[in-house]
Image (cartoon, rainbow, N blue to C red; front, side, top):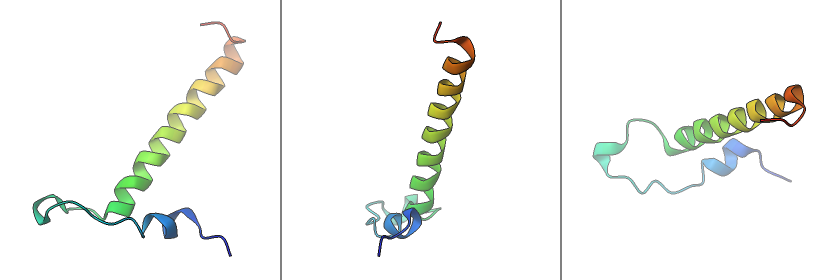
Length: 54
């Protein structure tokens, strides 16, 4: 019954004008989420390796 992430993102309304619609909004949002997850994962791994020391 639960929808996957892409199905949920495809339901987001596109508020951009026609001039700014090169890529579908769900794809732009997906890349933003993936980039954020990558950054968080990278920082978490660095903390584990460094033992929590900055």
